[in-house]
Length: 139
Image (cartoon, rainbow, N blue to C red; front, side, top):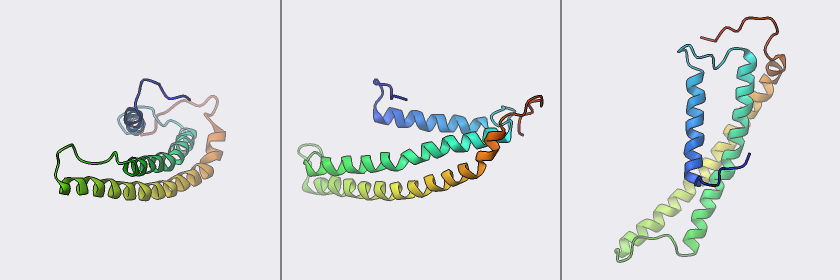
């Protein structure tokens, strides 16, 4: 799947967040048939394994970008700001990089856990939707 060329990285991330929210709402007890069979849960977890596996790379790329921008002297306050503001901007960039690196490590653990759950649930997905059985939404 190729990213739409007219969306920024921030817009793509916001779109992904909204899609995850929609998936969560579709599993709720409000009568929507988001999860009808156990295979639906298995397929959803497998898809989430793919999503979470991509998070560490994105977080690392964001941290690397901030590092490159700082090294190139492009992170700082607006012109005419005080020296304290310059130090604050550099400190904020450093702190954000550290947080993003830590988030990347945490996301890798999350991805590993979700992938393990997907592997355990895989046989349920193989069962798929039973032929001849009525579709009854999970509530």
